Structure formats: structure tokens, C-alpha cells
Image (cartoon, rainbow, N blue to C red; front, side, top):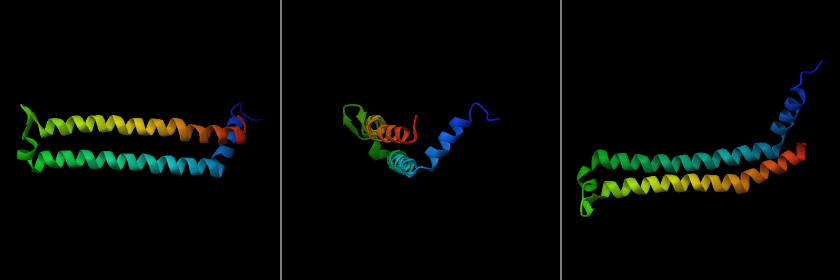
Length: 107
């Protein structure tokens, strides 16, 4: 006797075996790792500047606003931008590819 979840398990196995699914996962992981690398490099550079060049980071740009404050704000905006780039790609490319795959194997 089959369990109630058996059809779902079979469907998941068909999806996992499909080359379109493996390509989708590979592309999504590659893109995610690239965005992660950008984030880590930017944050590491900022922390390195704080650690090794305090006089540079303490230079005022506009009154009491220093380079560190401007770079910190730029990192925050950049992080939001990276998130927006991922969401846009997920909503346009990855979701469409997944819907096509689900239609192929049957919802």
C-alpha cells in the first residue's frame, strides 16, 4: 500500500532528475555565490580600511561627515541594491524557468 505522499515523492524525483532543474539550480547557485562574493569583498574592504587606515576614514568630507560615514551608507545602499538585483532575477528568470519545468512534469 502506498502512502498518501507517494505521488508527491515521485513527482519530486522526476523534477530532480530533469536536466532543466539541474541547470536552474546550477545557474541560481552561481549567481548567488557571485553576489555573495561581491558583498564579502565590499564589507572586507570597508573593515580593512577601518583597521589599517583610520586617518583616511576619519577625514571629513562635509563638515563632520567623514569618509567612513559615506562609505558605510554606500555599503548599506549597495546591499539593498544587491538584494533587489537578486529578487528581480528570481522573479523574472528563475520563476519562469521553474514554472516551465512544473508544466513539463505536470503540476
